[in-house]
Image (cartoon, rainbow, N blue to C red; front, top):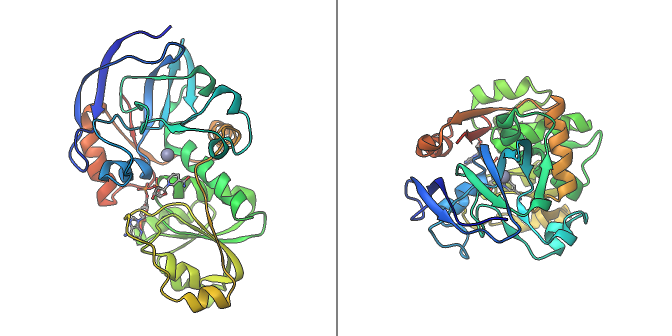
Length: 320
Ligand SMILES: NC(=O)c1ccc[n+]([C@@H]2O[C@H](COP(=O)([O-])OP(=O)(O)OC[C@H]3O[C@@H](n4cnc5c(N)ncnc54)[C@H](OP(=O)(O)O)[C@@H]3O)[C@@H](O)[C@H]2O)c1
Ligand SMILES: [Zn+2]
């Protein structure tokens, strides 16, 4: 079905350098199908790739795994783990099956068009694409992380990096779940906004001295906050490491505290297609308020500037 095609894309030609927006030529595998991209989110993961944080990747690259647009005139999202068809419905599929990531090993969505295997398409109930690009990856990530950390109704949970794309949408999911959420941001202005989402916003990780310790930490920032967030965790609590925004090594400053409190530390990697579909449903229902700023493909370097300067709440969304 697919043949050689040409379209505009933002190309990463050198790690850490501005993207080049130009016409690219691709030759996708036979059975892959095109999606006309209408909105694609700039994930914190993309920023890690852009910096050169994944050693197995080499430019030129077309990034972008938070892809929403039209296939055959129908609104769709693309499940971003490129896995064999027989794996796609298996729970936890992305870990158990061989996989590649859209926008990393496979040309991604910072483009007018993207080619994907048809079994990764998820039908959307409406075509408000930026809403999905803003929130679906973050919510699906949090659904998975909450499962890993045993977070449920009544759990007291600290989320660091709570104003970012994963954070601001993920904390809304946790609040819906019935968790008591402490949402950490460095910025008092952003904290004010987070308070409107049914969570308790904090600008210091010392909050536990007056509020008490939490049952779980969802660590989105990583190296810069993990030692303080560990202090906020109750004995036997669960810390789930989801991200490490600066890419620095994560060091445990007080191993005695880790040992004596019998802290459980988990990793949480992405999400399966069931979690992705659940996130789409929540976004469609209006239960999750999307936070984003939209940019054209030509403005992609402005989007990165704003993401890196920390001036955004939620996602930068590219609308090619
Ligand atoms: N494991 C997974 O499944 C998965 C999925 C998606 C993303 N991720 C990872 O999760 C992390 C967050 O992703 P994202 O998309 O939410 O990123 P993002 O939109 O860039 O947000 C990151 C947030 O981290 C905070 N932050 C940044 N630098 C910081 C520092 N030096 N100290 C303290 N806080 C800092 C900022 O909050 P304030 O400015 O408000 O303080 C910012 O809003 C990234 O590392 C990404 O790679 C993992
Ligand atoms: Zn993402």
